[in-house]
Length: 59
Image 1 (tube, rainbow, N blue to C red):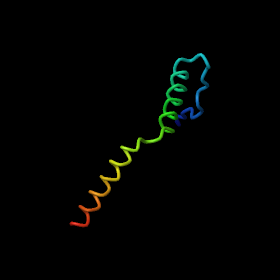
Image 2 (cartoon, one colour):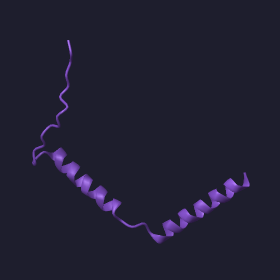
Image 3 (cartoon, one colour):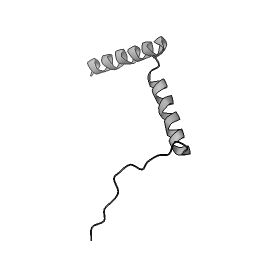
Image 4 (cartoon, one colour):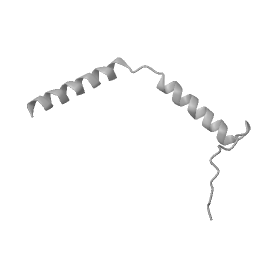
C-alpha cells in the first residue's frame, strides 16, 4: 500500500500568527540584506585577504 504525502502548501490565513511572524521576519531579513557594509568592515576584509595571500605565497 502506497502512502502519499500532501505536497501542496497549506493555505495561510491572514490572521494566522505564524504567517504574520514569517512575513515580518522575511521583511527584516531583506532590510538587513540590503544594508551596505561599513567601510571599516570592508577594510578588515581586505587586510584578511592580504594576510591569506601572503601566507599562501610563503608555502
